Image 1 (cartoon, rainbow, N blue to C red):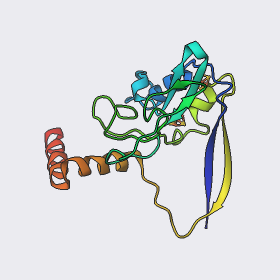
Image 2 (cartoon, protein in one colour):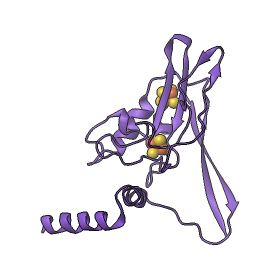
Image 3 (tube, helix red, strand yellow):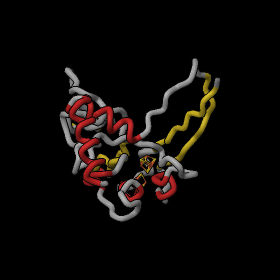
Length: 175
Ligand code: SF4
Ligand code: SF4
């Protein structure tokens, strides 16, 4: 069985920190779609150091239930960046890649349903590009939807019974 692997290639040297990618990502994922834009809801964030002309696009990766025991800190050309500054995980130790209102984890979904990732389309200087390749996989892989990722994190945080009670209550209220 084969699957298509999509890769967003990031050319840090071309990024000028305009943040158009953050804007379009947050607008695309707003509810209703395009009703607002707030970079805090974006699945791509720019690590910025304007004085040094350093801009690094960082994509939201996997949800981490607990904090790492170890931390990493990068020093690039003599400048120290924030601890965990280049980590892609949505984790409890910081607000990055967490929906600001609900606290639910955010993860890049490659703009599910769009022919091309919108951050790539909106990056006018070509710092972002997408490539696709085929890969062999064993058995059927389960692709978690955004809703499943959100529900999984709620269940881990509050317990299945409480989440089920809440869903039942909301359903009842909406009738
Ligand atoms: S749109 Fe492109 S140039 Fe602008 S911040 Fe994003 S990656 Fe950088
Ligand atoms: S590919 Fe889509 S979901 Fe992922 S960061 Fe870019 S705009 Fe956001």
